Amino acid sequence: MPYVTPYTFVAGDPLTAAQLNAVQANISYLKSPSTGVVNVNNASDYTTTSTTLVDIDAATLTITITTYGGRVQLGFTGSVLSTGNGANFDFIIDGAQAGGNDGLISVGTATDGTYTVRSANCSMTFTTAALSAGSHQFKVAWKSPDGGTIKLWAGAGSASGKDTHPQFWAREV
Image (cartoon, rainbow, N blue to C red; front, top):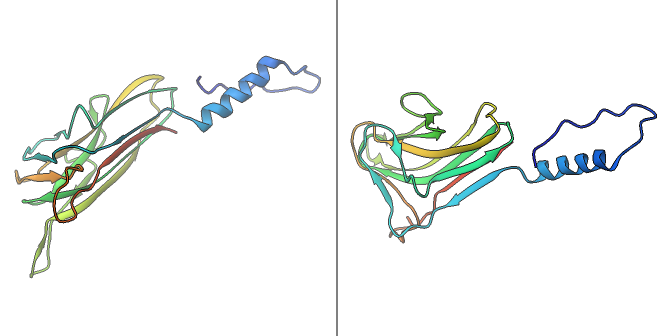
């Protein structure tokens, strides 16, 4: 049930069951807004060399929720490895990028003269503008800025402590 604007009571107005039920419905809505969560535990990890933003996994890392006309908070976290100069990530909202040409965040490599760090944690959140009431689709996309291979560990039992599990969530706020 969608959130509805509460009745403005005036002194002397009789209180009706419908008015009380509307208050209860609003409390229930605020307690349990439209939400979707994906906890990844795959048989294999994800990889890409694409230099343009592509879905990480259009089947698994996609959330569709029905909103009531509010904003939606999105979150994604995971562990990545790059053989090149990092990785770029973005959310795709109803087919459109949330960030600019290179996405919302860039997880890069770093060199201190002795060694190069190529593994990193990726975490991003984003709050949309108010969306129209109805069904909306959210995805996570990535790209390699230089065509190097990017790996996102996905619970595949990888060795050396890399059996990590990405999470993606969407929640109307």
